[in-house]
Image (cartoon, rainbow, N blue to C red):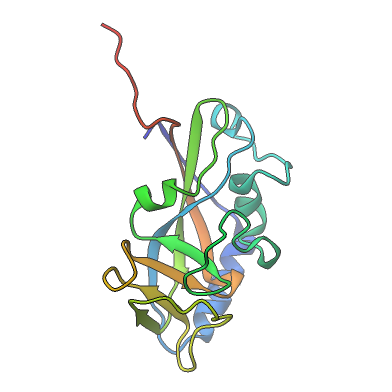
Length: 172
């Protein structure tokens, strides 16, 4: 980990809080989200306007339904927004820029979680009575993950920057 930026977007926070207040179970946890980095925000701290920069796009506009799973061909729990318990799992979905990668740390309004251990690829919403799907390792899953189906259930809170190959070599 080389650098951490705090994300403050009042519009997204308001949308998140409105959604959270509508839930019967007001459960929020933090998860990681891997996406593309296509700018020099690492050096400038300025969000870019590049439509292919997932980091800046999500920090400005939240997760967008039109961009669901654009870098995934397999959707274990259908068409939703996927986040992981482990940063190493989210790393698999990052694309870097100028030797850096970034992962977003997000608050997720889980609400009532439906725990699944096997694929349910046809989902477009959580099962009736639930607000999210929590994929628990075991069965057909190797890593825990959460899937929400509404963009206002995800609030980016931090950008975590790290070296693209995961190794920083110390000069002696």
